Image 1 (spheres, helix red, strand yellow):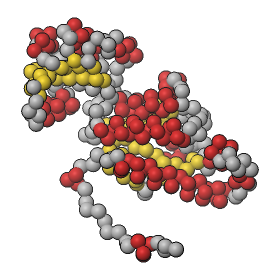
Image 2: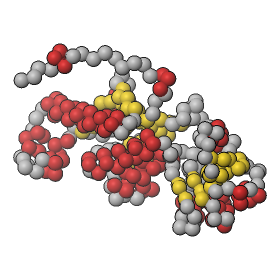
Image 3: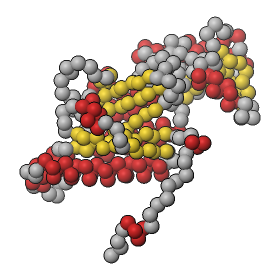
Length: 308
């Protein structure tokens, strides 16, 4: 039996943890703590503290856990650099799990994001969009920040120097180095994260690196009419999107491509220099099984393909 204390017990995540803990026979909640409650009075009775409190409370909670040699799980986000530094001082003193998101799906997204960034290199524009409920206090979300940190790490950048939080006014052309981060708040959305798939209309500029056996192809492709280049770019991007969807679904994620959005406005917001054109928006995560409709009928292979 593992004895736990939940801090931030009156918040959305705290209430969810209290509610679901009863489903696990090997867990026992010793106490639920929120602002005004005395953690020091009960911490000796627990094995681990689960913290979903607030960014300014976490350092003191971690220090108290270290003093009493108790493990801690930290799900709180929005910590300042100074608060993060304080927390890290205790990482070697007590067992600590510290993550911006504990969802299997989101952690799979972290892995996919790293692999995509490593594979595609520095020739793609990076933008992150996240939406959460109206009561969320920090922005960007911890998940969005983790995604940005992964992208910056792969590109060997310092995130604080390249992060671009939204845009307004005459901001000039988008730089190749920046990582756009956009936060939306409203309703009771638990957390949506969206990937934009876009085609690079100057993909041939990468040919010396991606097609080294045919160096002359760069100039030959550049000499084509814009409509031809656009068609090549779209076809290749759609293939890459297919690989991405297969990989996500193979890892157990629900992955829904969406058309029908305003491409002109999307491109104006995220790709103002005109180099990229958006193709689809893809939502990734775990859907509500009770709201799925049955899989639609499919045509027979012989009706859609000819095998030679």
